[in-house]
Length: 88
Image (cartoon, rainbow, N blue to C red; front, side):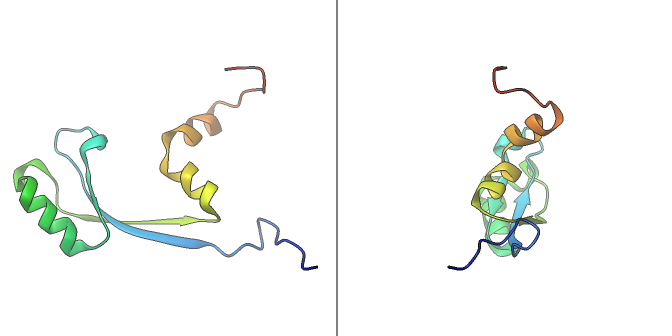
């Protein structure tokens, strides 16, 4: 039976996407797209003055759970503020 690779031996994967930041300052309203062309099209549809030009984002992750943690602010908050199992 093959052994499972340790976290250090796991192959890292990459997620690449494009973000047009909302000029309102609220990241919730950023445009996210798979390609630069799609980001530009969406930016034009929603108003060029409302969004910054597309910026390329490359995210490296180990597995699906690690990707979820990288994409959510929840895990970064937990990493900064360690808590025990009984604390909420």
